Structure formats: C-alpha cells, structure tokens
Length: 588
Image (cartoon, rainbow, N blue to C red; front, top):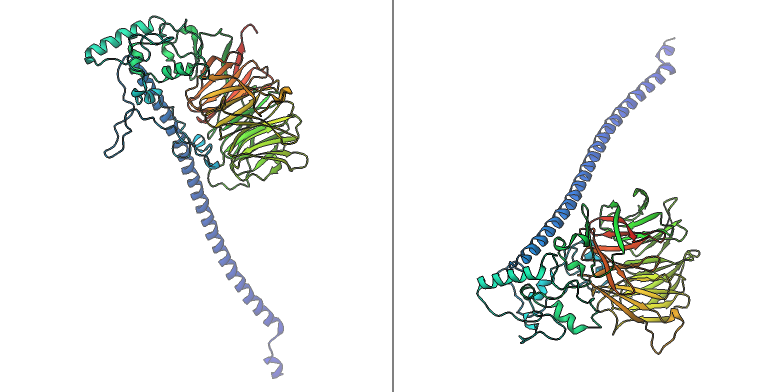
C-alpha cells in the first residue's frame, strides 16, 4: 500500500506540463504583442516622415514654378521698359558693367551665339531645362538685337554726301558728335517725324515687301546691322515680315488684337485673311516638349517630363495619362515626341531613355517597346499605312520600325545628330533634319538617298523641324538660323538631275530667334512656325509673306501642330502650357 501512495498519478504530471507550456506561450505572446506595437509605431513614424518629405518636395516644386513665372514676368517688364525708354530716346545700357577683372570684348567684336553643342545629350537640354549654359540656349527672352548692333559700330558704311541707291536718307550714315542737349532735341524731332500719328515709321505703308537674304543680301546687312541710335535719329524703312520687332503699343488698332494674356499683330502689307482665337489652355507640370493631333482631330497629345497626356479637343479635358511606372524615378525623363497611329488606337512616344513606347490608349498599356537607339530620341512619325514608325535620334540614325513584327526594318546613318523626321503623305519617302544644317530625303522602302537639301541655298545652322506639304512634293524646314525654307522635291516629281538636291523656292525671314517647329495646314495654304522668340507666325507659302504673329506663351514655342480635320492648331511651350487655338479664314 505504501508503495502505491509514492507514485505520482500520470494526470497530475500532464497538468503540470500543460501549465508550464501555457506560461511559456503567454510569455511569447506578450513579447510578440510588444514587438508588434513597436513595429506599428515605427511604420507610423515612417509613413509620417514620408508624407512630410512628399509635402516638402511638392512645396519646392511649386516654389520653382512660381519662381519661373515671376522671373518671366520681371523679364517681360524689363523688356517693355527698355523698349519704352528707347522709344523716348533714352540710352539703355546693354548690360551691367562687368565685374572687376572680367574681360570686356573689344569694340566691333561680335557676340557669339549661344552654343547648343553637338553631343546628343545636349541637343535639346537647354530648351527643356529653360536654363542657359554650355548645353543649350536659354528659354529666357531673346537678347535685343540692339546689343549686337551696338557692338558693331565699325561695320557701318562710312559717311556719305547722300544716301546709297535704294536706301532712304539716314540709313547707313554715321552721326556727327554733337552736344548732348542738341542730340536729345534732334532725336525728339526725328521721332515725331518718324512715327507720326499712325505709330509706324514714316514710309511703312509704301515700302516694298522685304526680300530674302539670297535676293538682296547687301541691303539686308545694312538694314539689320544699323545702329539703333542712328535709326532713331534718321528713321528708315520698316522691317517687313519682322512682326516680332514691332512695338505692340504703337501698332494701330486695326492691325492688332489683344486678349488677357495673348495678342496678335497683323501684317498691314498683306490682305488680312486670317483671324486667331484661343480655345483651351492645357496646364502641365513641366515643359511641354511636343503636341500632336489625332487623325480625326478629336484629340491632342502632349509630351512633357515622364508622361504623355491626351486631351479632348472639344472641352479641353484630360482623358488619358500615360506613364511607364517601371522607369526609375530619379532625374528627368522628357517625352520629346508623340504621334498617334492613323486609326487613333495607339500613341507612340520617344524619350531620353532611348526607348520608343507604343501605347494602347484604351487599356493604357505598352503594346510595343522598340529598343535599338543608342542616344536620346527626338522625333517620331507614323506612316499613313499605320504599320511603320520613323524615329530620329542623337545617335545619328533614322530608323523605321514595323508595328506587326516589332522589328527595325531600316536603319539610315548620317554624319550628325538627327533632330526631326517625317513621312511623306504617301509613305514613299522619309525626311530628316540634322545638326549638320542639311535635310535628307530617303526612299522609305529601299533606304536610298534621293534628296539632300543643303548649301548654297540651304540653312546656315542646325535644322530642328521638317514637314511635308499635303501634296507630298514640297517640304518646309525650320532652323536655328531663324529662317524657314520651302523646298520643291525633284524625286517626288519624278525628276532626276545630276545631283541629289531639291530647289529652295522660298525663304521665310522674320523670327527674332531659333525656329524650333514648322508645319503646314491640311489644305497647304499656310505655313506655321514656332520659335524661341515666343511667337507663332502664319506665312503665305506663295509669297513668303507673314500674315500674322501670335504671342501666346511666356517662353519658347517648342512645338506647333495643325489639326488634320479642322482649322485648329496646338502649341507647346517652355512655360509649362499647351494651348489649342482656332484660325478663321475670311469669307468662310
């Protein structure tokens, strides 16, 4: 019996083990709860700090935009005040005195133009960033031509007894040194005689249409390089197509139109055939690098930093936002070119990451990703067959891609970076403009070079934009030499010659700064151009005469595009806005 009482019942042992296990479980559970509380606290703090960083980033971005707008406003005001002072005969210093020890250019030396550089990464960098520097031109207002004129007094013709043939008195003459009081009185009298009641220089309405530099080069040099002080003392003929040089306040009311933040100046030498009105302003978060209409004219696409947008033309509402979320978010990634497929189902975009993305607009997904370019892509164009896409890149190549196979079917190499490409309306030819100042046209099937448009009648600086005329037989090009040229293509007309070169039939002069974009209206009746001088101009291709000049942006007009289906056109600018406009033809 005593032996049986010494034995511990099994159930008691099991209860003890279960109790110990329960205590251990509670201990572990308490520790896990504590760790969970710490984790939740850390997650909350992390999310809070991330939100604060995002808010700071947004604030900095908004400050940057406000700073840019204020800077543009102040520069506009300074330019206006300078023009007002010059109109009154006061002397405006061209720049602040140089710092002590800084080098001063000798009298008569030319101020070098802003350098774009020929590396692919710098072709558009200055335009996109809006900053000046070795990488590209600034988006700030172009420097007054008087700066260049005042630094070239030695290039003026010597004093003569009478004016040269074909020039009015005072042009090209050097004023004598007279006392300041007498000089001021003479300038005031000359101004009153020059401008009169109309606000224009005397002789403006009766002066002949300005000719191109090729047709009358000597006269152009004298007129454009004459000192502003000489001009005020003895005014000469007007500037013709140079509507951007006119003082808006002095233009008669019948030759101008003004709205809240845009205005139009009409050429009084040409019959007033067109009128322009603003339809929509499309705000963006960065520089608008490109604009393009769909083939039916119902939508317009824009490209900016990291994304492309599609807007409804009728109401101006954004209906689609396309952005590749797989791309790293560090740094800028500007969409340099956008293009709708002819059926409107796809939008092709070209960017700085050397990739061409073809988006399915309905699903907002990437259908094709074309890789092969070795540097930034600057231009795209869909062929009318909807199957082929042409691309131009800083890697000095034009490539043609097949939408059905997803392959590159043609590679065309040249000597310098390609800035712009375009298919002819029938798809037979592909044209490209380059930093080497020339325009090339190839057979789109064989890759055979059929035209090379260059000196002596070609551009004097890099070509930034080309566009075929609706007839497919003519082509327009815009250049950093501030001109637009209209070419008759020999190959498109079935003609063959001893050299591969079209005929330059017209040169359009009048912009004050780089011509960045050109296009023709669907009926071929008008040439449009956008410039770093912030203006958009309409030109008559038959006479090379400017019809009007539109100032509707506070920064460079980087892209212009007419609607294929209506009398609308779109503009994209460095002021972070795209705008849709309507042009109306008289008696229609």
